Amino acid sequence: MTNDTAHAIATERTRALSLLMTRWPSVTGSPDEADFSQKLRAHLAETPYFSRHPEQLFTVDSHGDPLTRSVGALVRGSGRRTVVLAGHFDTVSIANYGTLAPLACDPEPLTEALVKELESRPLNAAETKALKDFKSGDFIAGRGLLDMKSGLAAGIAALERFAGLEIKEGNILFVATPDEENRSRGMRSLRNALPEISRRFDLDIVGGINLDASSCERDGEEGRAVYLGSIGKFAPFAFVIGRPTHAGYPFNGTSAHRISAEIVRAMDTVPELSDEAFGERSPPPVCLEARDIRDGYDVTTPDRVWLSFNWLTHRRSARDIIGDFRTLVSGALEIALRTQDAHAARYRGRDAGRTDGLVLDYAELQERVTARGGSAALARLKALDASLAGSTDPLKVSREIVSAAVTEAGIEGPAVIIGFGSLHYPLVHLDQSEAGRRMQARLQPVMEEAAARHGTSIKFKQIFAGISDMSFFGHRPEAGETGLLAANTPSAAFTDDAPDGLITFPTVNIGPWGRDYHQKWERVHAPYTFGVLPDLVFESALACLEE
Image (cartoon, rainbow, N blue to C red):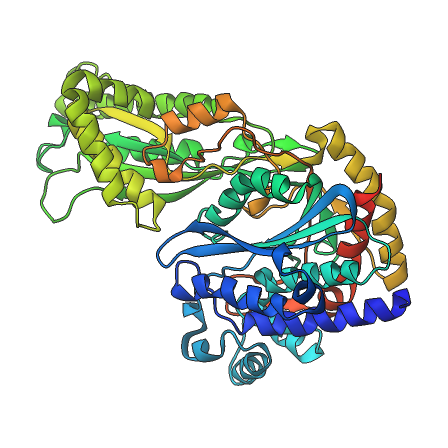
């Protein structure tokens, strides 16, 4: 079979499989997500290679009830060297399609319906661009088509093309995982299983290609890319404890809202808190949630206010983040207390005295819980954590646990408890290892040749900006980081309990591009995704398999 023929088959296969898998709904946390892996395994079992080698098609248990599983499909060649192609199959909700929700997972009818809707009313700039894209014929809509079932399809097409080679040097393992849109439980459980899989099939995993999608609002130049790393994410929280007072006597207490306002001012969108590394700059932190914790109305000032932030990083460690966050929170608390003291002095016409505050991290709060309530108090917090385990809202879970711990410890305000409210996604980058730098060097000519062959441009980009499974794919977290994060994350469900003996290997992201993923106008760029991507993934895998 000529390369041109193989490429044409891969292009058609990618398109057909992308549309087919999009028609299998798989919203995160739904029964459909659990069903998807069985459908995919059954589909692959009918292909020529896996009908001959059924033992090389398998599933890995992940989580949930009904149980979700990852799908693994291994094509063997000679030797032990193995490249893993990986992607997730879960999607975000279809609710934002409104009355078109019944068509959300049926790409071609949905695209036609969206065009009719857009042509029927005045449009904003984003909608105007979406209509132009759809009418060009180059873009197709569908929940999950872009993010990221077309990436999975390109990986399967590359796997099948490898299976069709007469001489296969090395091995390719394709894996499809659930839960990326929540907390990457699919990828983390697969990562934990990879050592046993490698032993079972006698594999030496030398590299990984994540197949996740990227967005480009211009002509696609930013989307046609090989990403060398993925951004790090922290979710620091500040649980603010004031001293409540009747609204008619504001200076008899301490305003938790004033303290929280100063913390938000010190943190939210402050450019100096962004990272610069690899020639790129991360976004500054933003406040994701700010709320006082009370159930009803009265004219008493709140004693507890919860703040949660999203802090994306290109280089900062967990120790850096919690240290910097403590400094910012301590400074904000001081400003808030001195300001209220000054207001009280002006209002009363005399010095009102000095109000002092306290900042504790969650590990220090736990020490106070133990000192005051002993093992019984810790057991109550553990039981609360277990009762909240089914929640998909990490901030709610963390908020309730911290509030209970503050009560158990008997903490009086003004005080602020800090910690991490959700799962940490580690920064990963090829430059972190010599093997990664060699992988980049091997991919450079592949990328250039693919771009020339298809008459397009493909470039390296340093950091995949979306939170992705790539943070856990081939990555073994540092023990010191893991311990610090676990001690300061209230819920065990949002800590990464990585076992010993994990396999590490360099990874890149090579995936489809499109626009507006997670939105109603989510759409994939068909010419690149179906025509160029399976070729690029296949050739990149072969380059990584070379001795």
